[in-house]
Image (cartoon, rainbow, N blue to C red; front, top):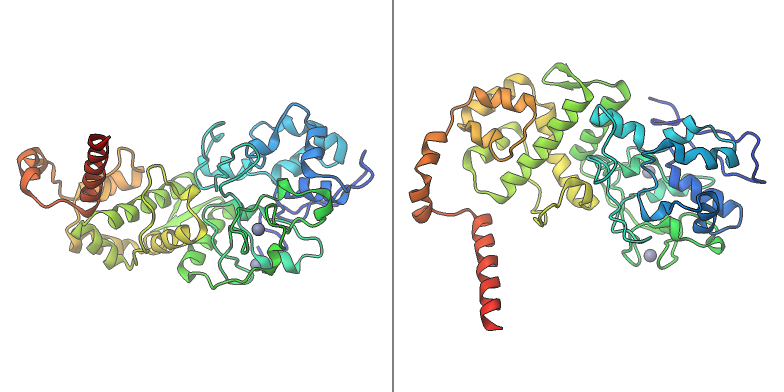
Length: 376
Ligand SMILES: [Zn+2]
Ligand SMILES: [Zn+2]
């Protein structure tokens, strides 16, 4: 790395049909460039995009994904910027690298923050570093601020923000108006996001972030001293996130012991709503999870094997909580003792044995719903 960019180099604008076009800055995300181009022309971003794509409501979708690159034809013709350059400012090439194939057209993309768009409003989706924005001559939002494994700024060493410091709204620069002039204005309350104060980030989360960046930049991962392709590396990291969440909600002594021996510190509890995946968690919650998986992703083979042995973790403890686990996990788990025989006699044991806190909470919620129904 060491250059001014990690993901794409941006461009200087050549001849354009428009009178003025914002320069695509190094690592700028395509939606930021669109908004900056609108503002520089004295135009509302939504007006500009409607003129470019009369039939495509870009802001009601995730406009940074660019699943279909033909969508870029009109903007390339107007701006004079090549399609390959604008594609490099979209999430598509990196998603393709992580998936090892074209990512799905619909649904959340694993490892990318989901905006949760409803009409033109968002639940979340993009983070920012106020110091980076302050240091820009013309502020712009970086592509890496949409990566779910990014929770800190490696330049300034503090945690990224994902909401307005004043009104707590998510970042929605596409909702700005021409008179707002600068992309750093909050789309809801109009304060300047560059004025936000910051906190330091968790060093382990930043280490994981840099490690994952390197995997993508070098197009190869390293796990327990061996090379691993990008897709299985990210699958493994994703699996370890699930494992941490299992350890948080279940009292599983061997699993907790295994994680402790590896050096994992479990994060504070994270909301357990169903479907609450990494991609929709806020920066703070993701930071805790990613800091927790760093020791797992960087442990040596010897440490890992020792921890498996000493903790008495079972095959089911390592790989049994999910139907689909990565090949590496399945292979490793196959050498561990199985609890399958005990499971067959569980039907009687379950009635008397202690329940986990998670099970008790779910039972209580079910009971409460029944009581509510009975009182109607
Ligand atoms: Zn920064
Ligand atoms: Zn605000």
